[in-house]
Image (tube, rainbow, N blue to C red; front, top):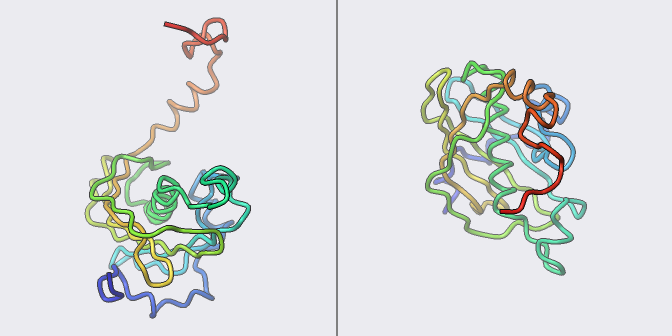
Length: 186
């Protein structure tokens, strides 16, 4: 895929000027610790509904030791999580879904094209395709390393019922379906 096939011309983006650092991202995205998959957001265009951010991949990532030993490759699911977090950030910052939290609703047309390794910067681009407030948001996304698309597809976000989940999480174990704490065997 060539640069002109990207969702946005990355040569026009100033990667030295972020529109959101990690603290700004945390204001709208709930992920923390090992699950934070964005380093910064560097471009936001509400009119065109396009956002660009990146993750600097380090040797300290939680997956380096085990995926794969001696040959660390960023798992595809982690690449997808990074794209989802950028789409979520943009959706939540500009209240496009009308929900206190957005969650995974589905993936389509996902393709992995190249590996991502520690030391790489994966640049995520998300472009809103359509939105049904209160129901679903659909975005096309790309992950780019050194001008090569390494992952792309369509991601769907849905509203998360945070009040119901918070109540359920704080309920005693027996109310949540765990009556005795041990594992159940069939």
